[in-house]
Image 1 (cartoon, rainbow, N blue to C red):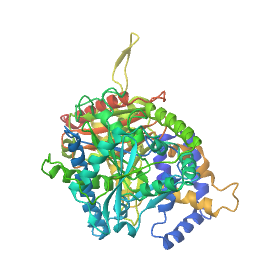
Image 2 (cartoon, rainbow, N blue to C red):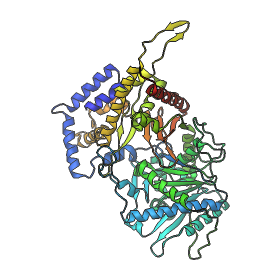
Image 3 (tube, rainbow, N blue to C red):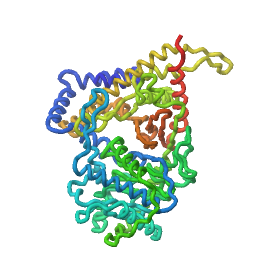
Image 4 (cartoon, one colour):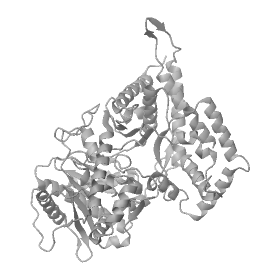
Length: 615
């Protein structure tokens, strides 16, 4: 409670701070309800592998009714390929799938090496559960609450993938109990069949767009589809598939998205990185590749005919680090193989891939039209920008004896303050894998120390306004450096607390859910602490951030979590930093171009401060 009160100070005025202190005393004082709820959680801890896991999963994902694209599923961009024929597309994709089967064999034997923490009490083993939930998993929509599907031990005997091309879905067996796994050549031949077959067919009803709709609405349609045996089998095959492969057409340079700031970075033809990124996040809408998706599926590998490559993933089963490690491993395998223009010979004993056909009623078609309109509107509203800051990267930051993550988090606070003259509740994910089934807690970067520092950094100098010279009380560089060191110390402490299990957000969530479960009356299940404006403000993350480090020159981005908020992922490289910034056009207060500019100016000011000679 003390940590909660302290972290809320920068967001509240004096009266609101006083009210929050009163609510905390009422909740957590001797003999108060908070102490009883704490005992309830301690009892739950004794009985469960992870007392918080179900609470967190429901709150973060399964109880959330909003559409998955933009709002939840991240997209990842890999360096574009150079494809000249459909054989090149098929061969590269076959190599990705061949590497997937190698990885699956390791999973089946439960032989993934257990990772160890490398800092902050190094050597602690990290929970590997997420790694075993990535392949063969799917999120299932529900009218009240979603659920998760993970294929069990039977998955070791037979495996298949779903390939989507021009909105047609195909089931491709890649491993069978009677013949073992398909070779790279055999997978390539199956993909070539699909690439030849799909363009010859009439456009199918875009059932995949339903997976991008609001969860209860998609659940209602899915329940209706399940009444038909063929549809039921299709949905079962999709859920049990190792992953989905999306063979895209590409968005083309005409797709309307904002030009990026900073270095040019990757490009495919006339398409820049921002264009590539939105293809991976949402597919570009119904006229492009959004019907070429199944957003419920944990892994969707995307390979486009124009060379754009990447990933879209459903977030509930795993965090970014587990997914990134897998897909980078697949791409490195495909890159390491020698180029081949050899056409694979058709295997006579292998039947062609099964194309999934749907039995749809008139109301299903009507629902698909509704979903299409909503998905297209959501996509049109996304203001997204890839910004490569090229003045320096993590080498310079480390030379300042600061963690790159801490440094960039404070840079984001400075950028927000320069735009809005205040701080906001900021979410940064912190891995809690030192605990069994641990996922993430929230590093709150908007600290009192950060506010003091950004206010000093953003202070205007002498200004001549309307003919009047206005002199401000300037903060010296020495004072700014002191405030900087204080902010760094606090941010570092906050980061360490979270990864060691001492964050406040999971604990607050647990106390809130415990109150619901132990309330004697359903009419008043929550203490005032959780119904007050201050708690809503604490969880209104207008700045949702995460470090998404990669070993390759790839990057990951996502949408904001609030209508007036920003999404900001970052990937620090040795001499530059890749930011993926997002907002909504419908907001009257946000703009990724303005945020990128404020971020660039702030990073330059920080470098100037830290390199200025001391007197």
